[in-house]
Amino acid sequence: MKRILLKYMEKFTTLNQEEQEAVIKDLQIEEFKKGTILLRQGDVPAKCYFVLKGCVRQYALDETGKEITSNFYTEEQAISNFNHHKQDKSSSYSLICLEDCILVVGDLEGEMDMYRKYAELEFMTRKMIEHNFGEVQDELASFIASTPEERYKTLLQKRPHLIHRVPQHQLASYLGITPESLSRIKKRINQDKS
Image (cartoon, rainbow, N blue to C red; front, top):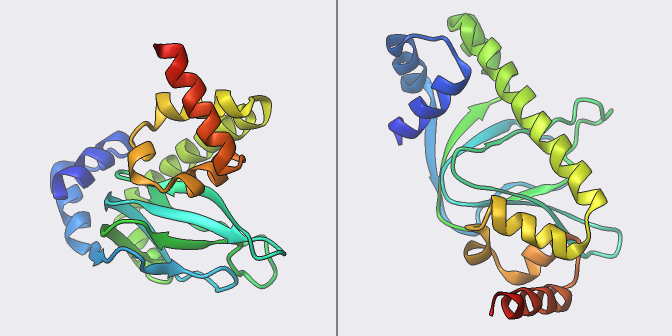
């Protein structure tokens, strides 16, 4: 697990090897069982996460009680909650472990202590957030402009591992379609390959 963190940190920091090792030593790594709820919609988040192993689903309940999946986080992905624009700071979504997970757990209150201890860490975090934000903007623009079939093909191209790790109804929700539509799209694509 340490190797995964070092590899990720090297992309975003100029910390030397010794400093990276010291940061990793101060990080809290926890194991969570499948089905563990990390955050409930409406709660004020106190933690952020980085996935070392496993899959975490982000979803919200709409006004009818229907679950809408907005993301899946897998290995080497950070999970942050940017809700400071809201008066009550509550989360608009829930986070649940779809698999047994190993996560780096960041305490949002202790974040400033880490930044004081490792000055470069704040710069690294900003670079990571900018990188992730850019990806999210690109994905959203692509999602809005594409058909359901194009969305599924993009998923096959960019995140094929999700197909076997995530229940079909959650995958369909993530793609903005019904499970039945997803089945038809999969069937059509498989026929085109034949």
